[in-house]
Length: 103
Image 1: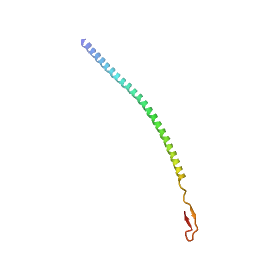
Image 2: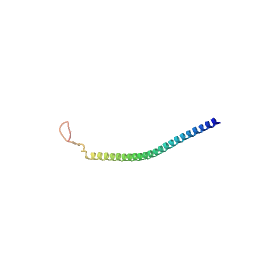
Image 3: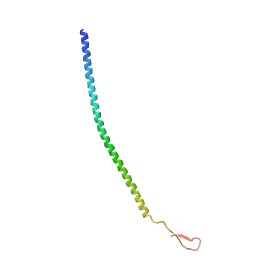
Image 4: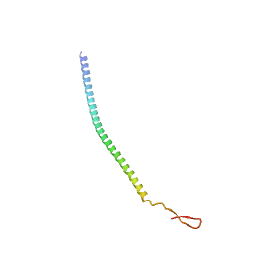
């Protein structure tokens, strides 16, 4: 019986050791999961901040494009206003084949 008891004790000791190893591994996995959750939380916050900054940037770009468009319209209007009138054709009575002349 001594061998059965020692075998059982050895098996119990091995099982206890294996259980301790599994519990240590479980603890490491839980710590890693917690770290990942914290990182994901931080990533989510950073992502939200980045998305807000991107939206702000797009809004600013839209505003600037509108300002550029308005400025181009104003410049075109000013150029049209400042443009000299086209030369006028004034009839001049002359003798000969050229009865019309530009001034």
